[in-house]
Image 1 (cartoon, rainbow, N blue to C red):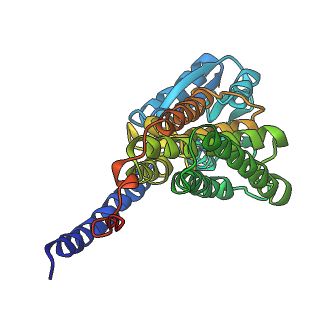
Image 2: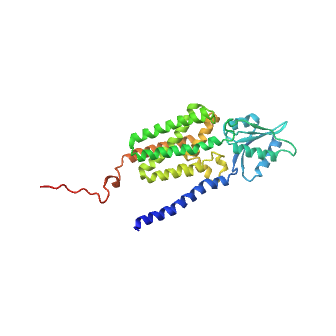
Image 3: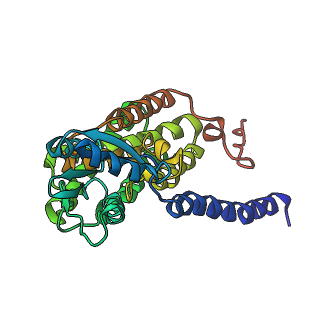
Length: 331
């Protein structure tokens, strides 16, 4: 049996388990370690009682990042601005909890459980959902599940542009057009049909389109610079690491460090956070999400243009061995 096929067979045998191992690590490890890590929460109310509540939360070993507010209105405003995931408010009638399930149903549930432990024995602590998740998706499952299909769409667009050998301006226009159409179609499904996002329709379509464009242009740019192996690198970043590190199903602050921070710099995490902001919080706290997506899209498109100006590889221009043309017979 020839040596080359043997080597390829061994490579496949070793590569497939390696891919499975990396995939299990990327998806299972963050999911198994979900816990609050400096999760931003607020405390509002009169000093003695509010300070006692703060001490109770600080005893949880760095689980919460405490923000102090003067009254209930200030705490509600902070939640609506996505500065905190919830707030413990001490009033004359007793303590109460403000949450925002639209920001993170998992964080809202965690704060509710923490409030039960902080409430006096035999009393129920009232909970108010300031920014509630939409009725058709109260647990945020649909929004969390939507990021993977968008990642696959982005990788597919970048790969198809590469395989079809589109270059330069034609490749850029193809990526922009495909991403924009995905934004329109995905918003029609998520907003108009399922009702799992409830913000401005065109803004949501723009955010989804920008998210897909960031991933598609990154894959296309890597392929333009590295060849077809760039598709694999792009898929690894966008699908494997980008989705598992995105925190869209929980919260970035609930993932192991520095996974949450890294995930917010990759398009899936940045896109999920930006979509949540425009869908439920009137565009509040876009933070680094919008600049991150714009940077990925711009750098990727520049790479597509630069890579398109390079000469084709020798492998694409030379004929395969054993297929040399015979010189024409003369005389």
